[in-house]
Image (tube, rainbow, N blue to C red):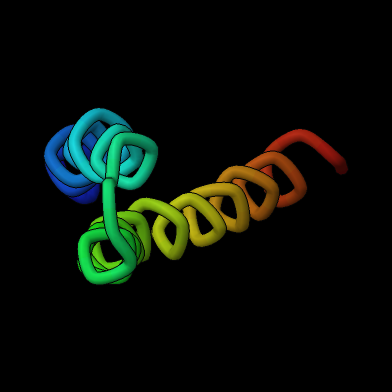
Length: 66
């Protein structure tokens, strides 16, 4: 399983809840709160996706280029 549950849990929460919350906010305080929570939930998939890409490239280079 590894990092897959992190992607499957945090990214839909970020995309569905907090981005819609920012778009439909009526005042500045709610925009700040939704942006803060959206940033917290978006940080995990963004950081893990770079690492996954690095692992994929490393795997390809070590196994298929000889």
